[in-house]
Length: 213
Ligand code: AMP
Image (cartoon, rainbow, N blue to C red; front, side):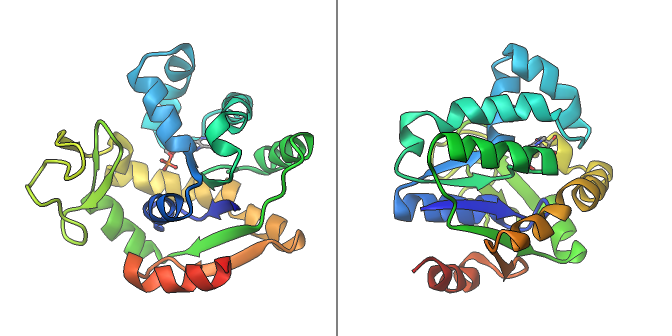
């Protein structure tokens, strides 16, 4: 199984990717998670990427493409993967096409999570993530058992800097300008499947199951 998850921030890509990667035993490759891990570990990539990520801007294509080129070649990606947040520009999509060709791999579907601005703002303002394992929560919709503590690893939950309201607006603008054109890109490749991103996990899961049979 090889999937691309497209859609604005807060549309549910990361949450569903975590569910599906566990169920189907494929790698969940989130460029956002990879960049945040690099920033936390203060790698040279992390240092270059930090100001872009914190301000809701896209990290330059060459950096992200190189990061994914290496990540896709790792062993856990061989049985399959879900790309969450990559590609985000036409240049990245073209680079991915080339990379897949080199590795003799094909993508099954590009799944477009279509969500309303209202839902996105509601989700991102209440979103909390585990600072250690990256598990995703929501103060109201997916609350942890113990407030502020990750159910899975017991670490503290944090609010992402880029989930601040101003930065969310910026990220939505960037999405519309840079990433939304990829909907047509994958439609032309006959890979596109659009799902309603406003639904919660239990409602969306059967829709995705049908697509993935
Ligand atoms: P996400 O966790 O997918 O919302 O990504 C968080 C941030 O990481 C984005 O706002 C960008 O700054 C950066 N980022 C993630 N994926 C990409 C990508 N494919 N290209 C450029 N920047 C990215």
